[in-house]
Length: 256
Image (tube, rainbow, N blue to C red; front, side):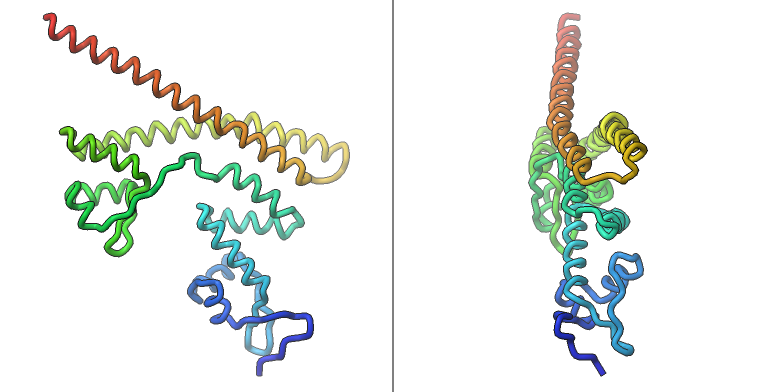
């Protein structure tokens, strides 16, 4: 027999009711519990009863997943919250780190439409490279601008396979460049603040505070525009050099 709600207990849910309210399958809810993302329910005999706090936690998990977090990363964030940290400060740092650097707008079309543009074999390779995602008979390319640029190259006579290969090599270079910037930030910004924390803890005998997280958030926000400008300006300069070199070679062939 289910126990009645206490006077200050608020609404409680059985597992199926909670899953429905959160918009997830019951098996997903159980998986979250197994991963320690969700506290155990209150037991009323053999029945588990979940509170509004459980529902709020599930909605927070869904929001963090939507923002690109892994379940392990979410577990660590929630652990920080449960240990008394201000979740707004924790998420402030998280937002500064994980907010997408690009403003690319995805484009969705039918599978047949994209196949008509590029062919079935090339489409499968694009899926493997992570350029597009398939959901039913719909496909989504991560960037309308990138898709338009690819179509322009193909229509100009560049084989799609070569475009995809070039894109793969470019992504490798971009990954290396991004990793270099992450190392710089981790060493000279995060590392510096961590050193300050260590010194404060040693002299004051207490842990980090949320003001320090705010400082880190602001530092990361300041660094983002500079990194973008450096990459854009550097690529433009490299293109100038490469275009001039190609023109010089073409002129040399014409003169010979």
